[in-house]
Length: 415
Image 1 (spheres, rainbow, N blue to C red):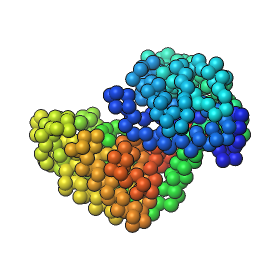
Image 2: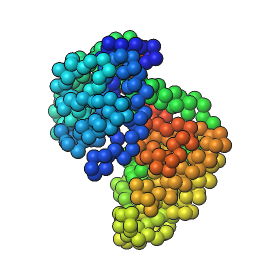
Image 3: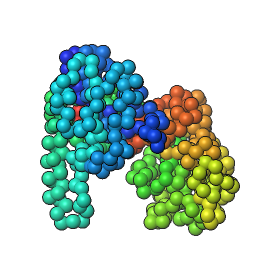
Image 4: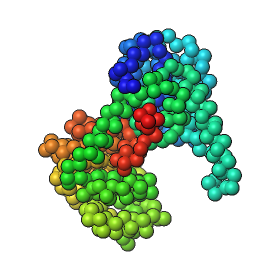
């Protein structure tokens, strides 16, 4: 069943969205891309005369209630985007009465799903090495099914529009689909678009294919980096992971973020790139600061010669030019992760150079796919989101789809 074919009139629809939006210290949304992305699906349900139950996670509360991650903070913003009042259920697993009372055209937002460990379905407070772990895992899987069944009981149909979590087999993204027949579960518009964009990049790679991977840690991107090695012609690694590579090659990185236990891994990546004929582009210079602050003193230094007491917070001018040169000549581009602490205006130059080069390549006919919260925030901050081919709301999901993995959130509906 597709969302276009379905008539929601008189139906209660439970929709999994990804409203894991960034908030400032006052709980105000700093980037509402994910909310705007879900609007076509949510508005279609309301326009048909359906009632809407919205569910999402926020942050990583690890199965415990944490006010910092409460979706109550975004209730009014969601209401403003939809143009209607949004009711709030303060406990996602005890919302049966709230759901039952919904009239056509009304909207209910459930509290953060991840306040319950059953959402992620991982045993809590027990290590994998523990002999009792397997039994705990079985018990949690059973509890996860019950949790999914409870969520499913609120509605007549299920829509998954949360591409950002489609790579997770969570209660609300995959398990819940078992409680609806094929005619009453479907992908939302955003999910459909995302799946198509990934197909475009994989089934139709025009070369050279350049991937830009940023972010603070090599460890979180290792699987992706290794898989991309078999697909890309150029691999740019930037952001905080620059300094792990710099140190691995004998450099001095001062106070820069660095994974000391991943130095061998960094050298291994350099070796693999050579063996596979992939052009690996690493930062050669950086903007170093004497404090983690927008107002810090700065100096341009080689990425391997950062003085004690200083840390690299952005790509330097030579690095920016090297990155831009590779990107401008690409025909397929994937960008995930910024080149520096772009949240500070004085450290945006590296990420901006990447964004500008991607725009230039796109204007010349390249297909450019930008994904992951920080990269999306970058193109929005620089006002170029409409100048790239596609902006994905998914970080991990996008990367796993590009690795060629089956996404549980899609498989649960498409089979």
